[in-house]
Length: 311
Length: 304
Image (cartoon, rainbow over all chains, first blue to last red; front, side, top):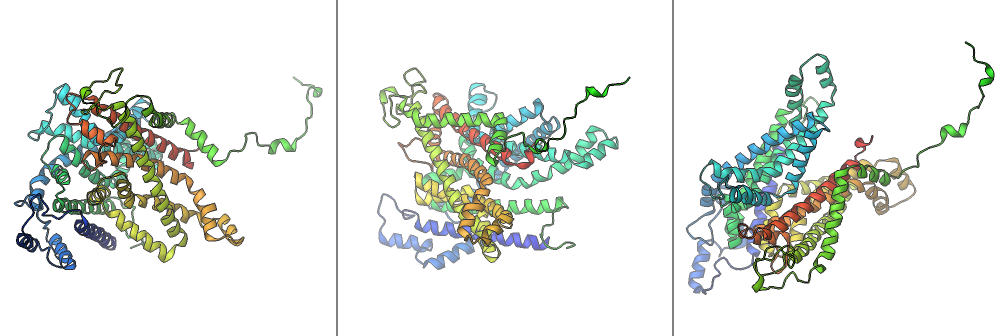
């Protein structure tokens, strides 16, 4: 187990190093100078600015400083808004995104698992077909289209929910549902197929012949085993929720990190784009690693080290 | 009661009859096709896909309007017999733009899938066939690259390289091929120790012949499924990027840029968002359903 975690940690750090390095060199080749504006700066001021941001040093020194800063959890300043740093943006926007993301994850897992279980228990009957059509639709409708449609029909046309902004629980319902729709569909399909696989096992037959009730079999024997593959989906789920938040927050006018990220893309605020990308990458890679470790702990059949038996 | 013996007739054994195969023999792909045909949803997806491709080819010619020309006296018109899908804020015909967008979206999807195929088959094929150190090194590299979050990398590349069709396809392919290479490698690993490969080797076939004639054609099933499922994800990525303002630049019409333009006007001119959005969903749906159907048809466990 420790060996496996160590190995995974090394890969994670390598992937992170790759993206950090990529962001650093991308920033150098990105078109335009960070201080480019309509007004030509006097050379003395430009030299001063360069010195302030450390741009007068050779590239390897800058690269090393950049790495050190990332390790110290400092994602750098914004070139467009002088008084703001990427850390400010993260501290301000991330709690909102986190709340929205958690709500979406809750919806996705709860509804997805429920749909999958119903579909598997009523295999090849109408609840199965209905649940799977809902799932295929969920996979085919991108979250930003789902969000626009929900906003148009439920908020603008019918007025059940507020159209936009981030003020109360009611404001969070539509964005969370839109964000959850695609992962929910994946979870429903995953749960269904793994339930069907478990239901075909001999121990289910044994449980039936022992005279256990249907409910006990479903809850104690089927669902518990069928949910294991769903745990593996938590990594991609985090990634999906995270990237989905870029568009959903924009559509619903939510002041989260995703919306700030998209704004910085449209402003070509390079340092913010790079900083937030690195932050997101760290977040994502760490959560995927945690999910994988959790999976190894939950499922005793998995030999994480992939090595010798009896280890 | 007695039955007289003359009511029976000795027919004797017909040896040939027992050995005869009554069903015509099916090639692998014929068998797959028969199973695919039984899947109604997949068949529906295939028909839908055919229709969408037909409209992408001929749709722009069905209307006298051009996708890029403005007509400011006719802006934001609702759907009518004149403009079937209405017009947008510059008076451009949404019907013409929708099918122009279909061309772009399908082109991006197919191009991304083909590039993934080429790199993935080469990388995975070589890694799987060579094995040992080569395999280890190549797949470790792929693992590290795979750890880099896909959409974030694509966004970064688009920001740095600038917006455009080719940049978008390049950005998608940089990490897109990894999935394909893993699948090809797995297939090659499981096939390369089969007797017919050994036979080919004994007969003196060289590596490229074994790869091209034996290993890759026999891996075609999973490769095809992966390709069919890559296309919708590429179409989605295009729409997503256009939607966050990193897409193709006007006057090119893609479904993503159209949806992005239509979003602020949703309250008053919903058709500007509705048409591109619906066709994005239909296309992704069709490819997904066909891909799923193909995967089920190819899965020997599904054989009855």
